[in-house]
Amino acid sequence: MIAARRANRMARKHKRAKRSVSINLVSLMDIFTILVFFLLVNSSDGEVLPTHNSIALPESVSEENPRITVTIMVNEDSILLHGKVIESVKTLLSSPDDSSESLVMALNENQRRSLPAKEATIMGDREIPYRLLKKVIASCTQAGFERISLAVLQVKSEAG
Image 1 (cartoon, rainbow, N blue to C red):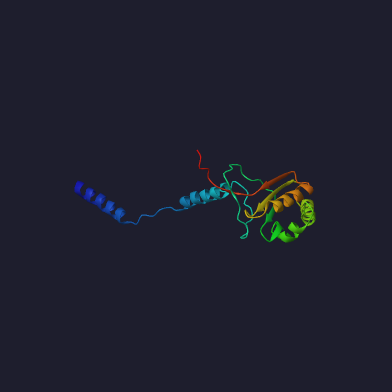
Image 2 (image 1 turned 30 degrees about the vertical axis):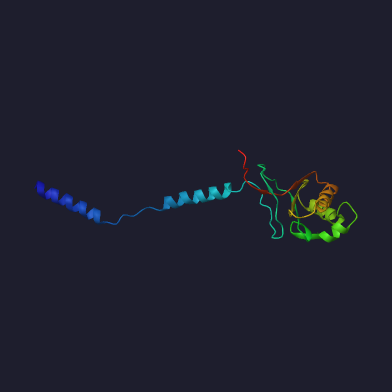
């Protein structure tokens, strides 16, 4: 009788061992979904500026993150405001004025349509002449922009 009970118990054990083991993936998928959303929300710290193939930004070791501002792109051919061509570089460099009237008008029009933040970011190619950059900065100042930043590529500091 004892041997029969033992034989029955061993038979049940062997029967359970033959069953396929299944994993409940629902809770595992929930954890991964929450992790993905967390990483997506917390992945970007700074502003992502629009890029243009014709602009090679200078490099900097600054630790400060950029703010969201009006973006002016300056390449070797033209001046763009949020990707729209405002004036050609040749026209602005040949002009005797210290600023670009068309850029001032475009900046003022942009300010009427958007938030009243008086901050601008200039994305200038590292090869543009300083007098061109000076005219763009003067145009921003004439349009009433109080804070003007120059976009750079952030690199790691080699010291410390």
